[in-house]
Length: 182
Image (cartoon, rainbow, N blue to C red; front, side):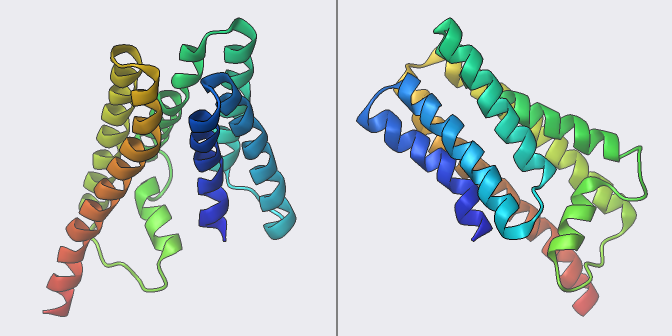
């Protein structure tokens, strides 16, 4: 259910863009993110910080973009969000007992994941690099290509790259399970 709620604002943005224009799509996404946060709160009585940060960026940058009639401001949202993630992941290398990648994966897994501490740090740094590069790639597409290319890139490109990178991480982590099982 939560995965559907998380994806819904992006899908509604895309549909609104296809049937109307970029400004309408921004407004639709602002409303959808607000509804997403409200529904998540009503259903679970908590909202993840990541969702709140993303919603804050959508509403804040969306409002500025609409008020100034400058859609490029809104196109910065994925970059800012990815770079915030990069800073948080990098900071977790030095603050706290475990890197954030380890905390996320262990909290999502029912089984214990047996990975040496150095490999958790490497995995965490891989995510830092990924977030920095994907944030930069978003800016490249936003500044170098027409609006419709960026809209497609935002939905399909960024989502696809993130899923592919997560799968690569799963394969990278699976080598530990293979070692432990042998």
